[in-house]
Length: 146
Image (cartoon, rainbow, N blue to C red; front, side, top):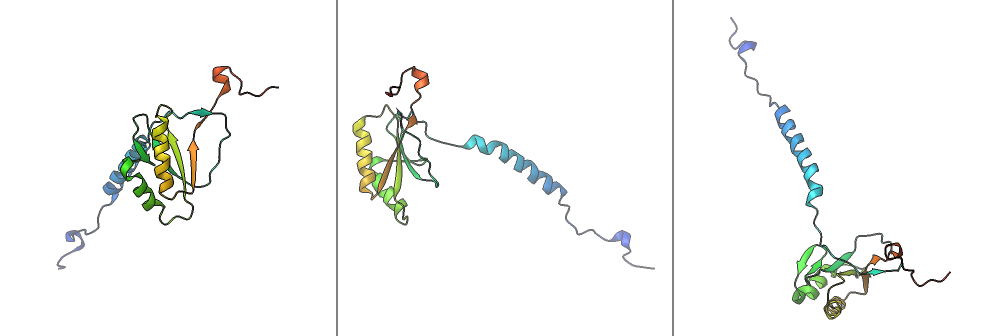
């Protein structure tokens, strides 16, 4: 007579199959929805006939939209705090370079005011971001005679 035979023993192993199934479903859902969550600021940039610049690293970008809202990368900032925020962001950086994107419908004086705030924050290089001018759309030449 054996007490507690093999048929009476409780199984103490955790069944991970349902857990793995749920995790895979969640992974697929996040993979599908993540690209839809990308945010940005919609700006109609002025067009110029200058060549594109290639940069190796991710640079700090200040954007001014049509409604004169100011963004540092994708974060909205008020004009009063622009200099302060840029000083804090650039405090530990050796390369103090900022790119400025401004909607073409923003008043020139406002853009110059933002540029002054950026320079006052200690930015050494300030680059202007534009869209390349496409002569084929307008049918005009870019001033070159052949």
